[in-house]
Amino acid sequence: MSYVAGVVAIVVTYQPDSARLGALLNAVTPQTEHVAVVDNGSAQDVAGVVAALGGPSVHVISLGKNLGIAAGHNSGIDWARKQGAKYVLLMDQDSEPDAGMVAALQSAHEDLVGAGNKVAAIGPRSRDRQTGHLAPHVRFGGIRFAPVACEPGQRTVVTDLLISSGSLISLEALDAIGEMDEQLFIDQVDTEWVLRARAKGYVTWGHCAAAMAHSLGEWRRRVWLGRWREIPLHKPFRYYYMIRNSVLLQRRDYPCWAWRRLDAIRLVQIAVFVTMFHPQRLQALGKMLQGLRDGIWMRNSR
Image 1 (cartoon, rainbow, N blue to C red):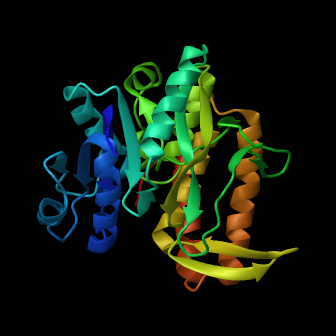
Image 2 (tube, helix red, strand yellow):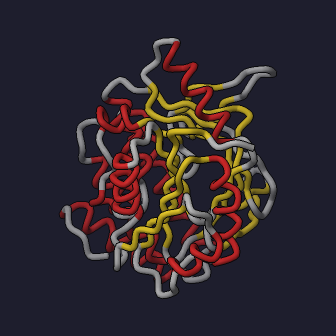
Protein backbone atom coordinates (compact mmCIF):
# COMPACT_ATOMS: atom_id res chain seq x y z
CA MET A 1 0.00 0.00 0.00
CA SER A 2 1.49 3.34 -1.05
CA TYR A 3 1.06 6.54 0.90
CA VAL A 4 -1.01 9.50 -0.24
CA ALA A 5 1.33 12.35 -1.19
CA GLY A 6 0.67 15.73 0.38
CA VAL A 7 -1.08 14.34 3.47
CA VAL A 8 0.36 14.91 6.95
CA ALA A 9 -1.27 13.01 9.82
CA ILE A 10 -1.38 14.89 13.12
CA VAL A 11 -1.60 12.69 16.22
CA VAL A 12 -2.07 14.60 19.48
CA THR A 13 -1.02 12.62 22.55
CA TYR A 14 -1.39 12.95 26.31
CA GLN A 15 -0.37 10.04 28.54
CA PRO A 16 -0.90 7.60 25.65
CA ASP A 17 -1.07 3.84 25.91
CA SER A 18 2.12 2.72 24.17
CA ALA A 19 0.57 -0.35 22.54
CA ARG A 20 -2.39 1.58 21.18
CA LEU A 21 -0.16 4.41 19.96
CA GLY A 22 2.01 1.84 18.24
CA ALA A 23 -1.01 0.31 16.50
CA LEU A 24 -2.10 3.78 15.34
CA LEU A 25 1.35 4.65 13.97
CA ASN A 26 1.64 1.27 12.24
CA ALA A 27 -1.73 1.90 10.59
CA VAL A 28 -1.37 5.56 9.61
CA THR A 29 2.32 5.82 8.66
CA PRO A 30 2.04 3.74 5.46
CA GLN A 31 -0.96 5.82 4.36
CA THR A 32 0.47 9.36 4.72
CA GLU A 33 3.57 11.21 3.57
CA HIS A 34 4.45 12.40 7.09
CA VAL A 35 3.15 11.91 10.63
CA ALA A 36 3.48 14.60 13.31
CA VAL A 37 3.04 13.33 16.87
CA VAL A 38 2.30 16.36 19.05
CA ASP A 39 2.71 15.54 22.74
CA ASN A 40 0.94 17.61 25.38
CA GLY A 41 3.44 17.14 28.22
CA SER A 42 2.99 13.42 28.90
CA ALA A 43 4.86 11.98 31.89
CA GLN A 44 6.30 9.14 29.81
CA ASP A 45 8.94 9.54 27.11
CA VAL A 46 6.63 9.73 24.10
CA ALA A 47 9.52 10.68 21.81
CA GLY A 48 11.33 7.52 22.85
CA VAL A 49 8.24 5.38 22.29
CA VAL A 50 7.71 6.92 18.86
CA ALA A 51 11.37 6.47 17.92
CA ALA A 52 11.07 2.76 18.70
CA LEU A 53 7.79 2.40 16.82
CA GLY A 54 7.73 4.93 14.01
CA GLY A 55 9.72 5.22 10.82
CA PRO A 56 11.69 8.17 9.45
CA SER A 57 8.48 9.91 8.33
CA VAL A 58 7.31 10.35 11.97
CA HIS A 59 8.19 13.68 13.60
CA VAL A 60 7.66 14.45 17.30
CA ILE A 61 6.67 17.90 18.57
CA SER A 62 6.88 18.19 22.37
CA LEU A 63 4.80 21.04 23.80
CA GLY A 64 6.18 20.54 27.32
CA LYS A 65 2.82 20.86 29.07
CA ASN A 66 -0.83 20.10 28.41
CA LEU A 67 -2.08 22.90 26.17
CA GLY A 68 -5.12 20.98 24.96
CA ILE A 69 -6.22 19.21 21.81
CA ALA A 70 -6.81 22.43 19.85
CA ALA A 71 -3.29 23.74 20.53
CA GLY A 72 -1.89 20.33 19.65
CA HIS A 73 -3.71 20.30 16.33
CA ASN A 74 -2.61 23.85 15.56
CA SER A 75 1.04 23.02 16.28
CA GLY A 76 0.79 20.06 13.94
CA ILE A 77 -0.91 22.15 11.28
CA ASP A 78 1.87 24.74 11.46
CA TRP A 79 4.47 21.99 11.00
CA ALA A 80 2.49 20.50 8.10
CA ARG A 81 2.48 23.89 6.35
CA LYS A 82 6.26 23.97 6.53
CA GLN A 83 6.39 20.55 4.87
CA GLY A 84 4.33 21.84 1.96
CA ALA A 85 1.34 19.66 2.85
CA LYS A 86 -1.90 19.93 0.90
CA TYR A 87 -3.97 18.13 3.56
CA VAL A 88 -3.84 17.32 7.26
CA LEU A 89 -5.41 14.22 8.76
CA LEU A 90 -6.35 14.80 12.41
CA MET A 91 -6.09 11.71 14.61
CA ASP A 92 -6.74 11.00 18.29
CA GLN A 93 -4.30 8.75 20.10
CA ASP A 94 -7.04 6.14 20.65
CA SER A 95 -8.13 5.89 17.00
CA GLU A 96 -6.83 3.54 14.31
CA PRO A 97 -7.57 3.96 10.59
CA ASP A 98 -8.52 1.00 8.45
CA ALA A 99 -6.26 0.17 5.53
CA GLY A 100 -6.94 2.48 2.60
CA MET A 101 -8.88 5.01 4.67
CA VAL A 102 -6.69 8.01 3.80
CA ALA A 103 -6.66 7.28 0.07
CA ALA A 104 -10.46 6.92 0.08
CA LEU A 105 -10.93 10.22 1.90
CA GLN A 106 -8.47 12.10 -0.31
CA SER A 107 -9.96 10.78 -3.54
CA ALA A 108 -13.50 11.67 -2.48
CA HIS A 109 -12.34 15.13 -1.34
CA GLU A 110 -10.75 15.80 -4.73
CA ASP A 111 -13.91 14.72 -6.55
CA LEU A 112 -16.16 16.87 -4.34
CA VAL A 113 -14.02 19.96 -4.87
CA GLY A 114 -13.85 19.19 -8.59
CA ALA A 115 -17.66 19.19 -8.65
CA GLY A 116 -17.69 22.73 -7.25
CA ASN A 117 -18.30 22.01 -3.55
CA LYS A 118 -16.78 24.12 -0.78
CA VAL A 119 -15.47 21.24 1.33
CA ALA A 120 -14.61 21.94 4.96
CA ALA A 121 -13.60 18.37 5.83
CA ILE A 122 -14.40 14.77 5.06
CA GLY A 123 -14.35 11.99 7.64
CA PRO A 124 -14.78 8.22 7.95
CA ARG A 125 -17.31 6.23 9.91
CA SER A 126 -16.22 5.29 13.44
CA ARG A 127 -16.19 1.70 14.65
CA ASP A 128 -16.59 1.32 18.41
CA ARG A 129 -13.63 -0.64 19.79
CA GLN A 130 -15.73 -2.38 22.44
CA THR A 131 -18.91 -3.22 20.55
CA GLY A 132 -17.74 -3.23 16.93
CA HIS A 133 -20.71 -0.99 16.06
CA LEU A 134 -20.10 1.19 12.99
CA ALA A 135 -21.61 4.59 13.72
CA PRO A 136 -23.54 6.42 10.99
CA HIS A 137 -22.88 9.96 9.91
CA VAL A 138 -25.37 12.47 11.35
CA ARG A 139 -27.36 15.58 10.51
CA PHE A 140 -29.37 17.93 12.70
CA GLY A 141 -32.84 16.50 13.35
CA GLY A 142 -35.78 17.90 15.28
CA ILE A 143 -34.88 16.67 18.77
CA ARG A 144 -31.82 14.51 18.10
CA PHE A 145 -28.85 14.05 15.82
CA ALA A 146 -30.41 11.99 13.04
CA PRO A 147 -28.41 9.23 11.32
CA VAL A 148 -27.75 9.60 7.61
CA ALA A 149 -28.19 6.42 5.62
CA CYS A 150 -25.60 5.54 2.99
CA GLU A 151 -27.48 4.05 0.06
CA PRO A 152 -25.94 1.12 -1.85
CA GLY A 153 -23.15 2.42 -4.04
CA GLN A 154 -23.20 5.88 -2.45
CA ARG A 155 -19.72 7.23 -1.80
CA THR A 156 -20.29 10.32 0.38
CA VAL A 157 -23.07 12.04 2.31
CA VAL A 158 -23.46 15.56 3.64
CA THR A 159 -23.06 15.70 7.42
CA ASP A 160 -23.69 18.44 9.96
CA LEU A 161 -20.98 17.34 12.39
CA LEU A 162 -17.70 15.42 12.24
CA ILE A 163 -15.46 14.36 15.10
CA SER A 164 -11.95 15.66 14.65
CA SER A 165 -10.32 12.24 14.66
CA GLY A 166 -10.17 10.90 11.12
CA SER A 167 -11.03 14.25 9.52
CA LEU A 168 -9.15 15.10 6.35
CA ILE A 169 -8.89 18.89 5.92
CA SER A 170 -7.17 20.81 3.13
CA LEU A 171 -4.78 23.59 4.00
CA GLU A 172 -6.79 25.73 1.61
CA ALA A 173 -9.89 25.25 3.77
CA LEU A 174 -7.92 26.00 6.93
CA ASP A 175 -6.68 29.24 5.36
CA ALA A 176 -10.28 30.29 4.70
CA ILE A 177 -11.94 29.01 7.90
CA GLY A 178 -9.11 29.40 10.41
CA GLU A 179 -7.44 26.93 12.74
CA MET A 180 -8.77 25.34 15.95
CA ASP A 181 -10.01 27.45 18.86
CA GLU A 182 -7.47 26.97 21.65
CA GLN A 183 -9.74 28.64 24.22
CA LEU A 184 -11.91 25.50 24.21
CA PHE A 185 -8.95 23.27 25.18
CA ILE A 186 -10.59 19.87 24.55
CA ASP A 187 -14.35 19.34 24.20
CA GLN A 188 -16.38 20.90 21.34
CA VAL A 189 -13.21 21.88 19.46
CA ASP A 190 -14.34 19.92 16.40
CA THR A 191 -17.93 21.15 16.75
CA GLU A 192 -16.87 24.80 16.95
CA TRP A 193 -14.70 24.50 13.84
CA VAL A 194 -17.47 22.84 11.83
CA LEU A 195 -20.02 25.47 12.93
CA ARG A 196 -17.59 28.21 11.94
CA ALA A 197 -17.04 26.52 8.58
CA ARG A 198 -20.81 26.24 7.99
CA ALA A 199 -21.21 29.94 8.71
CA LYS A 200 -18.64 30.63 5.96
CA GLY A 201 -20.51 28.48 3.44
CA TYR A 202 -18.42 25.32 3.75
CA VAL A 203 -19.87 21.81 3.99
CA THR A 204 -18.66 18.74 5.88
CA TRP A 205 -18.92 15.32 4.32
CA GLY A 206 -18.87 11.74 5.53
CA HIS A 207 -17.40 8.87 3.58
CA CYS A 208 -19.66 5.81 3.42
CA ALA A 209 -16.94 3.16 3.08
CA ALA A 210 -13.85 4.58 4.84
CA ALA A 211 -13.72 3.61 8.52
CA MET A 212 -11.56 3.67 11.63
CA ALA A 213 -11.60 2.12 15.10
CA HIS A 214 -12.29 4.65 17.84
CA SER A 215 -12.79 4.69 21.62
CA LEU A 216 -15.45 6.82 23.27
CA GLY A 217 -15.57 7.42 27.03
CA GLU A 218 -13.64 5.91 29.94
CA TRP A 219 -16.58 3.83 31.17
CA ARG A 220 -19.74 2.34 29.70
CA ARG A 221 -23.14 1.67 31.20
CA ARG A 222 -25.67 -0.47 29.36
CA VAL A 223 -29.11 0.95 30.11
CA TRP A 224 -32.68 0.51 28.91
CA LEU A 225 -34.10 3.72 27.41
CA GLY A 226 -36.78 2.42 25.06
CA ARG A 227 -34.09 0.01 23.89
CA TRP A 228 -30.73 -1.14 25.23
CA ARG A 229 -28.12 1.58 24.82
CA GLU A 230 -24.41 1.89 25.61
CA ILE A 231 -23.90 5.18 27.50
CA PRO A 232 -20.31 6.51 27.45
CA LEU A 233 -19.18 8.07 30.71
CA HIS A 234 -16.10 10.25 31.13
CA LYS A 235 -13.74 11.30 33.89
CA PRO A 236 -15.26 14.13 35.98
CA PHE A 237 -12.98 16.88 34.63
CA ARG A 238 -14.31 16.34 31.10
CA TYR A 239 -17.78 17.47 32.15
CA TYR A 240 -16.35 20.86 33.07
CA TYR A 241 -15.30 21.43 29.45
CA MET A 242 -18.47 19.91 28.00
CA ILE A 243 -20.66 22.37 29.86
CA ARG A 244 -18.38 25.42 29.78
CA ASN A 245 -17.66 25.12 26.08
CA SER A 246 -21.30 24.59 25.15
CA VAL A 247 -22.21 27.75 27.06
CA LEU A 248 -19.39 29.66 25.34
CA LEU A 249 -20.55 28.50 21.91
CA GLN A 250 -24.19 29.29 22.67
CA ARG A 251 -23.07 32.88 23.30
CA ARG A 252 -21.42 33.26 19.90
CA ASP A 253 -23.28 34.55 16.85
CA TYR A 254 -22.37 31.98 14.18
CA PRO A 255 -23.71 28.60 15.49
CA CYS A 256 -26.96 27.72 13.70
CA TRP A 257 -30.23 27.40 15.60
CA ALA A 258 -30.53 23.70 14.84
CA TRP A 259 -27.29 23.05 16.70
CA ARG A 260 -28.27 25.36 19.57
CA ARG A 261 -31.50 23.43 20.09
CA LEU A 262 -29.91 19.99 19.93
CA ASP A 263 -26.98 20.97 22.14
CA ALA A 264 -29.36 22.22 24.85
CA ILE A 265 -31.17 18.86 24.72
CA ARG A 266 -27.83 17.04 24.83
CA LEU A 267 -26.75 18.90 27.96
CA VAL A 268 -29.95 17.94 29.76
CA GLN A 269 -29.38 14.30 28.76
CA ILE A 270 -25.78 14.42 30.02
CA ALA A 271 -26.94 15.79 33.38
CA VAL A 272 -29.53 13.00 33.69
CA PHE A 273 -27.07 10.26 32.72
CA VAL A 274 -24.39 11.56 35.09
CA THR A 275 -26.87 11.79 37.95
CA MET A 276 -28.19 8.28 37.37
CA PHE A 277 -25.20 6.28 36.20
CA HIS A 278 -21.82 7.92 36.78
CA PRO A 279 -19.59 6.06 39.28
CA GLN A 280 -18.28 9.46 40.51
CA ARG A 281 -21.50 11.41 40.12
CA LEU A 282 -20.86 14.03 42.81
CA GLN A 283 -17.49 14.99 41.39
CA ALA A 284 -18.86 15.02 37.85
CA LEU A 285 -21.88 17.13 38.80
CA GLY A 286 -19.60 19.54 40.65
CA LYS A 287 -17.48 19.95 37.52
CA MET A 288 -20.63 20.55 35.46
CA LEU A 289 -21.74 23.35 37.80
CA GLN A 290 -18.26 24.85 37.70
CA GLY A 291 -18.32 24.72 33.88
CA LEU A 292 -21.75 26.40 33.80
CA ARG A 293 -20.48 29.21 36.02
CA ASP A 294 -17.30 29.76 34.02
CA GLY A 295 -19.16 29.61 30.73
CA ILE A 296 -21.52 32.35 31.89
CA TRP A 297 -18.64 34.48 33.15
CA MET A 298 -16.44 33.55 30.16
CA ARG A 299 -13.48 32.37 32.18
CA ASN A 300 -11.37 29.25 32.58
CA SER A 301 -10.84 27.46 35.88
CA ARG A 302 -9.81 24.04 34.49
